[in-house]
Length: 203
Image (cartoon, rainbow, N blue to C red; front, side):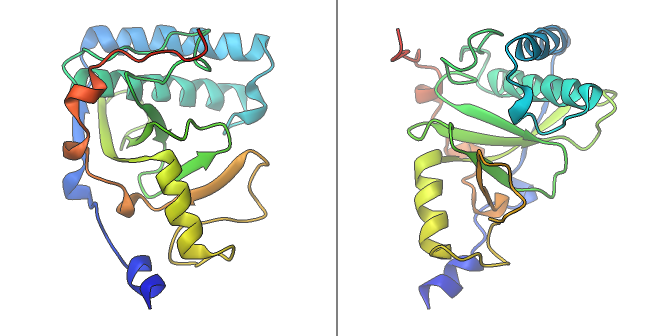
């Protein structure tokens, strides 16, 4: 009975999405750093985890991902630190959180095996992939390990077609897709936490 109720639960709708029109200086930073990050990923042969295998599509996705990080940075009054190319495996993407961009607003949040479990994951999207519109939508967020627990509790090792997605067509590092409608609205993500400097445990 609990599974049926949870599988139909909606926490966040598009009304809760936060539109952020990226400032000109942050737009330029996103393009510069996204391009540099893509170059470094190729040099280090890290593109095996890239969503798009086509070089042009992969670069575009990386730039939009960096735009999303700066949109979160702007949303929190430009205080949270944005990770720099070359250190994106050592620090959260922005402040105390990670950010995941989806090119299709209808998609959910893909959780991967290396995602830091103790930190929030913020899902973002846009409605124009041509770079003409600088609006990034902050869909919602969730603590990554909590998302893992909820997903597997509801599915119990078998996929419920109307609640998330897990399947044989995923890459080995991809765990599941969490429904965007079950993410927590951005207004409930603590500004105080996001603006607190992250302590890099690897240092």
